[in-house]
Picture 1 (cartoon, protein in one colour):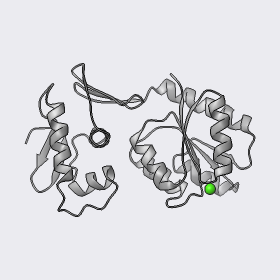
Picture 2 (tube, protein in one colour):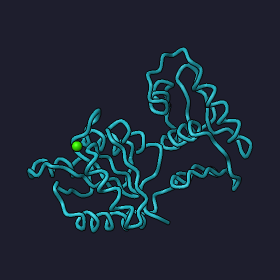
Picture 3 (cartoon, protein in one colour):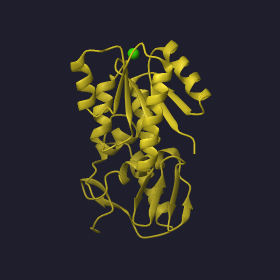
Length: 226
Ligand code: CA
């Protein structure tokens, strides 16, 4: 299977050069041009390697990396930056970067480092989420329960992945809404309820209830029945 790389870089010239070069080497590459788009790509799709620029509009690379690691994401991240002070390098690594490359760098060196990280990632095999008889392949976005394929809309998929990453936790409507919809939750709209209902209907076609409603508190994926 091809290696999937997410490049989060705001400078078009560098991004175009890297995307072209990496594709020529047979990698699947997507680019995000700012921190917000980068975050969206990070949480809605699975990547083998992330190339992350430090200085980015909206949310900088370091903040993005911190947030990513706080969600227990282990995808290798290579920091790309013009910063070359030792303290900055340490800061990047301390916050969960796996490697560090200072601009300007030679493409061959980037390639060598990407290969190392991709190999490490493929050995760790972290491309699936599962809970009991439910499994989600984050690379192909295939969802199965008891061996049966379930077709979800992209929003239902994002909702399910978010819940699968927090099994047994109380998830407030605000938290779910702001994560999956990336908008402020006004407490009035029933968009979330409608999506939960539809997701439940699809999941429950092949097994017992997994998404539990907690009165006045939100939802919980899995765990004891209430
Ligand atoms: Ca930049």
